[in-house]
Image 1 (cartoon, rainbow, N blue to C red):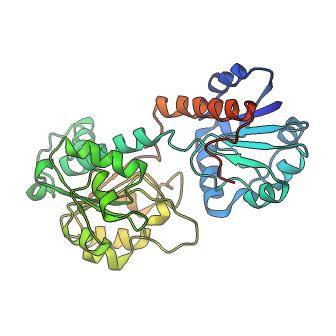
Image 2 (cartoon, rainbow, N blue to C red):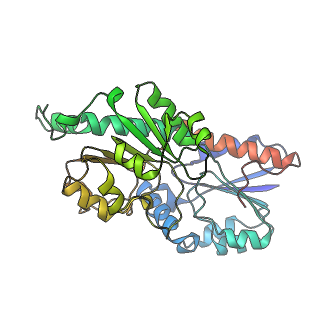
Image 3 (cartoon, one colour):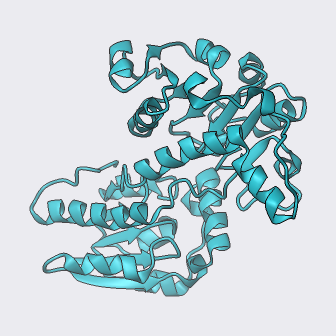
Amino acid sequence: MKIVCICDAGAPEMLMQLMHKLPGCEIKLYVNQEMMDIKQLTAVERAAEQGGSEVYEASDELLAALAGADAIVTHCTPVNKAMLDAAPDLKYLGCMRTGIEHINLDVCKERGITVFNANGRNAVAVADQTVAMMLCEMRNIARGHAALMSGKWVKMFPNMMYSHDMKNCTVGIIGVGRIGSMVAERLKGFGCRILGCDLNLPEEEILKRGCDEAVSKEELLKRSDFVTMHMFYKEGDPALIGAEELGMMKETAVLVNCARAGLVDTDALIAALKENKIGGAALDVFDQEPLPEDHPLLSLQNVTLTPHSAGSSIDAFTNSAVIMLEQFSQILSGKEPSNKVS
């Protein structure tokens, strides 16, 4: 089996080298230079999430590298129809991420190409950062650091009157899947009251996954000091959190989003933050990535922002390669890959 691995800044040659452990396979590493620049990678990644794989134009060099491939492994480089045409014998397509918006699934399905992902590769990292974002926004960690770095000693911030100990906070988790349940597990150590909402799970399962109560979205929004979402989002779907939902939240509540930008109506959120309708927001994902210098979020004082890095621990990247090895080992033993998505 000839496997072409497309390397980028998030899955460099050093990581892809692990694929050489597969017995009897011809492994070809192709370094996509365009995607070695992290800003360019981010821009391509976001464009593909919004517009699908066909927004990407592969270079002639990349197309040539795919010739004769039985399998392709990609991280953030989109795989469009032209690339699939360049590999007419393709049988397998492995994606080193959980999201597969950058894969042309219609063509893959039409041609019988098995697509699998690295589901769960960064779940621990995202759960860790979700809790960290709560602490940063509530306790002004990033703001205090920024003040010190600019020569200022600031201890009083606008949210001081509701900067509570975590044990006195109620956290609402919308989406109690793999990551959501990990967030609940971590928050248990702080002594938080945890509310769970998940339309795909019965009440007893939500409780089994670490929540103290299973509630409706409306009740969760009204009662929570923190609201965090851990759900998939398909471009074009309505936002989970819009002006109406923000209006249900406490004036002191913090909205946390380390999942997908589309889950939140950005304009409505900015308006709510400007008007102090909610206490603050901690965001790792955005409609525009990288964030332009004049983006309204950058002028607000009640936000904590990170550059889509929640899932970017070194362990998460290593896990991607390990999961790919597992999937191909299953294929080589005559089984279907356990992470098959199409």
